[in-house]
Length: 101
Image 1 (cartoon, rainbow, N blue to C red):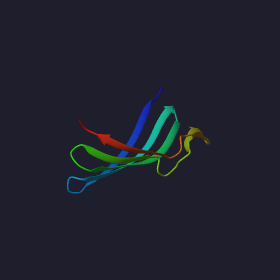
Image 2 (cartoon, one colour; image 1 turned 120 degrees about the horizontal axis):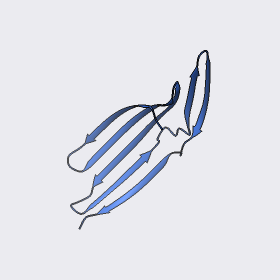
Image 3 (cartoon, one colour; image 1 turned 135 degrees about the vertical axis):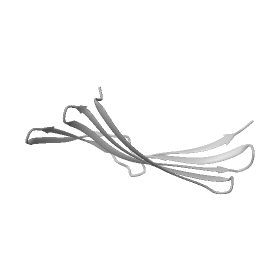
Image 4 (cartoon, rainbow, N blue to C red; image 1 turned 60 degrees about the vertical axis):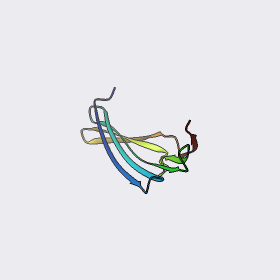
């Protein structure tokens, strides 16, 4: 259904001595779904992990940190421009505890 897709993805990783890792990801989507009809959306995600010992690890993941609730849709037709928006899921946070055997 998508004719063209433009995804800009920037990532930042930070690890300190073998125990903590932080990742930030910024996504900017621009999709042309039909001739001169575009969908645009920007999202910021983050992941953090802490290695407690060889068998235990704790972490936190967050999606849509900027809490965008809509994705804009723009259609260009000659001199006319039409804009609307689509709903998105809100901010999400996941806490995890891992045990390795």
